[in-house]
Amino acid sequence: MQLFCGILGPDTVGSSRRLRSLGIAGAVRRFNELSVPGLGGVWFGKQLMLALLGVRVSELQAVEGHAVAKMECANAIEALACWLAYRDTGWASDPRLRGRNKFPREHDLKQGPLYSRFRSRGFYVTQPMRMAAGSALVPLGFATSSNRRFNTLQSTAEGRAFLDAALGECRPSNRSMAEHLSQWVQGSPVNVTTGTVVRGLSPCLALPGDALGHLEGRLRAGGANETLEAKSRRRAALAWVDRLRRVPPVVPLTWLDRPPEIQDDRHWKTSKRARACGLLAMRH
Image (cartoon, rainbow, N blue to C red):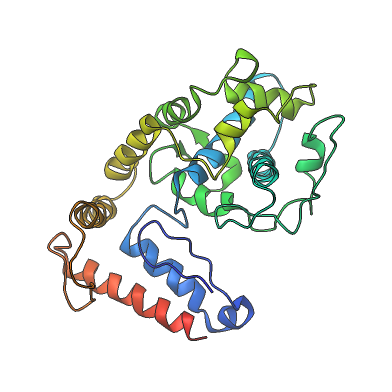
């Protein structure tokens, strides 16, 4: 069983049937969100990029007069990204990938992976990474929404700039990745299995440095409608992690020692409660 508490860790909890009845998994997610607001269940940058790319491709389809649900589009693109990564790594298990036991090992090799298959119900997992990443797009300023539902998201200038930084060097058929995948979604005969597409989409490959810098800026700045308290808590957590990264502790950390970056008493108590919920979940 894997359980990560706080900043940039996957929130997957084992024994889901038992935990659901106790409400522990929900408590972990809630306290994690209060400890480090705006991250949802995101723990690496490609999760945000893939979800936002699905939003952007759907928007491009709308410009062409085609109505494609953003949720459907993002799920299909995430499925394609994971399928390509599994294919290129010999179907090795990786915590950054999903669908290993769902995907066929060989798929439409003559025609290439078809959007109509990748979008179909049951082809991919029921809980894609998009579900966690989508809840972070608005707080971080990558998208806006009237009600936070994924299908109502609209990419912002900051969100599109992040995509450009993440995918600007990956131009399949000499067009942007979003334009290329828009053609795939539309059903046009485009190749989505090239090395260029894999480099841009694979969750196993890190974001370029420019994209990481842009993401760090959004983590610090937050979205326009985010509360000052939420921004302050996330900045404090980031400062704590940055210090530990620059100067690794010589002795193991304990929750008895409050870091100087966490100035707010309520924030520190919430962080300790998140840890306590995490330990309780691991015992069940």
